[in-house]
Amino acid sequence: MNITRREFLKVTGGLVTLSALGGGGLSAYQGVALARNTLMPTGSNPDPARLAGPVREFKLTTAVTPIDLGTGEFKAWTYNGRPVGPELRVTEGDTLRVVVTNNLLEPTTIHWHGVPVPNTMDGVPDMPQPAIQPGEIFSYEFKAWPSGTYLYHPHVGHQLDRGLVGPLIIEPKREPGNYDREYVLMLDDWATVDGGGPDSPERVTDHMGHGMMGGGMMGGMMNGMMGGMMGQQPAAAAGSGPLLEPVYDAFSVNGQVAATATPFTVKQGEKVRLRLINGGATTVFGLRLAGHTLTVTHADGRPTEPLAVDVLRIGMGERYDVEFTADNPGRWQLYDIISSMPLTTVLYQGVNSTQYSGDNLAQNFRWNDYSLLAGLPEEGLSPLSASGPADETFDLVLSGGMMSAYWTINDRIYPDTETIVAALGQRVRFNYFNQSPMPHPMHLHGHFFTVGSRGLRKDTVLVDAHMGQASIEFVADNPGMWMHHCHNIYHAEAGMMQVVQVG
Ligand code: C2O
Ligand code: CU
View 1 (cartoon, rainbow, N blue to C red):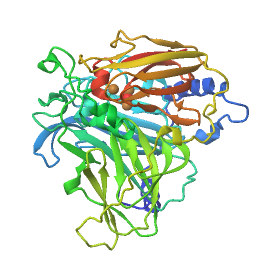
View 2: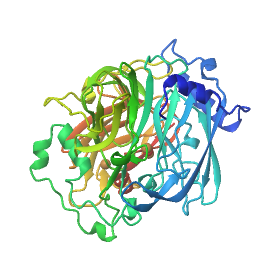
View 3: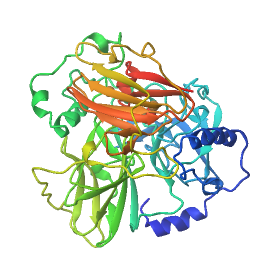
View 4: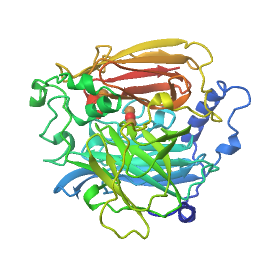
């Protein structure tokens, strides 16, 4: 991935797999596209020709693989044998075909997080497609649309936390950005002790954990947090209840930990784009590139008005595209200000110093509070500003974790949570109230939603800890059964999940 954009285009040009357009997957998509068109404001229907493209085929094989991130060897679960899944990169309008061979000892699926795929391709077991059994091969196929930064991962148990996550980049047909260099940075949290992930014996037993710090500190909730909200977790760790999240001992960017990571090189004067993806299972990061201001251009793949930030807060499942100008030569750390943990290195060409350049982060740093972000209108997506009141409003209280190992939506645990039913074309509003001591990145499948009143469009919204609130609105324009859940995988598996039925 250490190449300039121009070089990149040259390279991938040669790798395109051209083949005849398949039948089934495509016609399913067309059904969806038609449904969407009926909801478009006049004049913004996507031009079908714009969506035409070749079939691009990739192969993913899941397996248990011995990996050493620097903490000693452990058994990770991998795509193609690596600690991060390969980058799948296609152009908007291409048909993406991914042939998955499951060499695990349990069923798996792939969910294309953020892409509004047809329901049959969404990768939630039996909703409606059954999971891929051990030894089985399954081909996912769907139209890659719209452009943006996405991720893929299984939707089975805690598999994501064992290493199964990778980036999916859908490039626009015409690239409006004028950057010189691009890097994709997949962040991940690892428990590597005794089997790792959900097998790790070490558990977070109170909520002074990392995820909570994220919500607390960045949300200006430090006081409330320090005021003694340390709910002790009872018995669950002993095996009766759902799994508590593990204590992480390694944090990686593209499968490498900071101490041994290959630096991301830049050249003075370049405009650099970073596609930042949080593929962690429970960690909210506060990313700081020492010595630099980042300009947010996209949130969850959707374009935003440019916003300059000093620190970028990113929850699990969220993505941000940012740009910076390489105008401060040195060897710089990309670090997490929440834990003061180094993540990786940005190195200017020609700088030979092995010393890191010192940071000068202002006390009142700017960050990507959702209220500061505004969306940009996009062809083919429902309009940004609410065109009237929502047809249906649901108040959703997020709770749990204080005296219980379960996490709830309106006091209920999946699968006993309410199924939200929306007619095709209805405008639906969710009002979240977080009555728990941890932040919850809530993710809706199959749809984009707007957050707040400035048309910020996303698919995952971080609801702050300790009475944090957020509201989202979406047009139920993709028929099927869709998951809506917290992207802390341990919370999701411990109940914070529900179904949204559209059409
Ligand atoms: Cu990335 Cu239902 O999840
Ligand atoms: Cu949660």
